[in-house]
Image: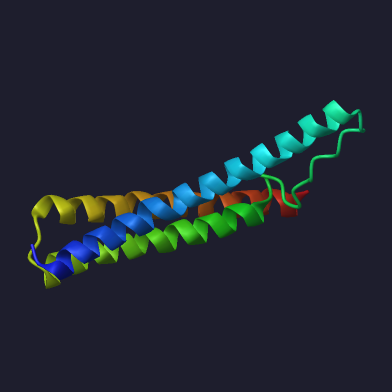
Length: 127
């Protein structure tokens, strides 16, 4: 395996696994900070601070639109990387199959989110 192939594999793994793990870590850190703030307020006898409300609820169609577009784009990028690995580099077959399969699964998830957005938008317009 050449340096370029190894570098590409490591970069893909960092991007695919690292970015979601960073988002999860940041969410957990924010929840811990809010919990600590509430604990300190209870200990001091101060009125509990209100939890900040999210501007968008989980049922808002725009949330599904955004995550659907991101998932679809990410899946297509992973799929294209699999095709490039197959055509430009001589890599092992399992890596190509895994990349193409992962790209199709993530693209399917994005497509489902976009479909849910269209259904929710229709329901919202009918009200």
